[in-house]
Length: 374
Image (cartoon, rainbow, N blue to C red; front, side, top):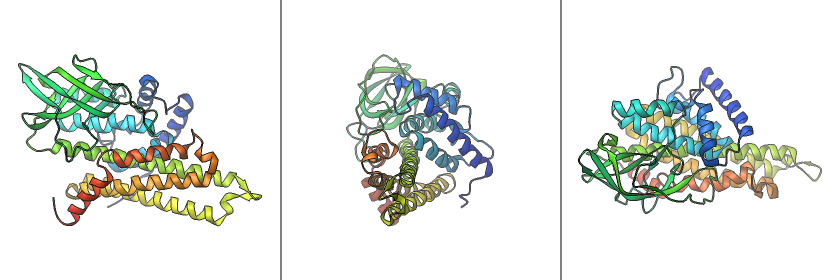
């Protein structure tokens, strides 16, 4: 297991930081702006290796491991932009690259990698939990068409997406239905107001006799592999998002502690503040190493990848909330004001624990793995 980044990767992270810094000055990245901001970001990122990570080979970059470091950089500048981009590129894109036929890959992968297509993935139905609840969204064959009926909730990018990958069932087996924007029978519901991630467009969708070409269907699959894969990819994105929140919260608190004075001296000189920063940094750096271990397992040790990923998600997402909370405590009233990085990180952190595989269900699965139950 080698978690060291190469010189090329460190250079890539620096370039990515500079790009995001410039982009954050050009646009309010925590505002979706009708999709303009996310498409601007995708267009800029297409000029770097970022969109290709875990989707295509880039000689000297280490796939998912490099992606963890890259997501940390992007997420620290804009949690919303990271979530919108990653649900499109890394989850929607990997569905196409892993399960699509050659024709579908040829049609959709190039615009994804070139930053010209925004994708969305619809999994959740009555709740975010799809582990214990059977999927009810169903596709039925009608000649050379497949007709879809069902409703999905909490769909990231749905109001803005060019394509939505709908996870449902066909012939009582899991399948993926690729639905293009504007298809008759596809209804996008109003954008949901959320506690955090203000710049992400999230809504429900309704499929009412929505007919798509059979060529736009992946599956049906004999095993629920597609669902397991999608949940793992989503969890990996949420891990990267947690790293970004911690980086932003820690650096904001550290810089504030250096600059702000109390009793005639910088507050960083007070032992209590130093202890809090030490705890925050310990959680952040441990989370980094945990994410790299999970990334390594996903690429090189698939048998244990699910357990490693779930363990990392639980630790990192809960640590993100704690680090953000400590940052607010250090920054006092300034930290509690709307618009700063620590306040934003605190509001966003809870989403990471309930999205993907929730921390409660994750703990059950981790326990099962520890006891050898698969």
